[in-house]
Length: 355
Image (cartoon, rainbow, N blue to C red; front, top):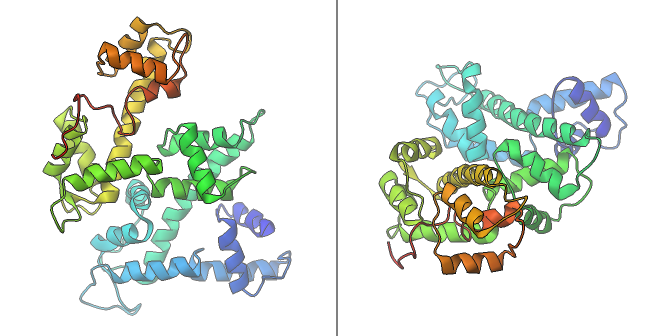
């Protein structure tokens, strides 16, 4: 498999190990060394027939294709879907982050207005997957080429930062333990980690459960989604009010099926974006007030004020004791003073039991 992967890298194609092994089996090369031109050509033919996807992935892609709006006129390739429904098919197959990647790159691609066949749909999906894999592979290569290695947890945190996830140690450790992932740090481990991370939007199990509980509070019986108005009400209830224009822009970005409503995954993506925005604010305050050097009560209050958070004296005492803040504070502890698991500490003194 590693010899095949090296050959694919020469062609600027990134493929993970489990996919390579399944394609080798499909090509009848499972027990071969794959060190001859003929064997490599057989592998490439098998790879192109499935565009690098596993059988299970191709099956999901077929279901996604069938879910798309069909064109009235069937072409010689068989069933065609409308170009407008292509994005919904990609969302069905790969989820929110898959479609986000597609949105960033689709203007560089030519999409047939006469309809999209299943093979064309397969190619579009493969291009998105390759783009995602290339981003991860580049990060892995950069981390592995460092003179001093940082350890698995820290290297995974470094990997995820440019992908839009600022993680604390406990968030990384929870995923590693749940998925049974361990050393060494490599592309396959990094890709598995990123996939699991995206499936939970970077939150711990407890954080995700708490956010979904809040989401369900605003649902009516039988509704699986919330309108934009309800989402804004929910954000205000969570203490995430602020600029209405920015809130509407974020809602627009996460309404991936463009129906004016948000489902659970879209809501969690919105909360992830909000958390990243808040963590950036916390980082600026932490550095500005030099909390890593020395911390006083006055300096901590000033840092919290920079984050638009104002804490009562009694609560501040509890926070400093809970996080062991005495002379200096680590960033993780400072971020922990912002609230338990919501993307931002609520500005309300308490939440009502019902919205």
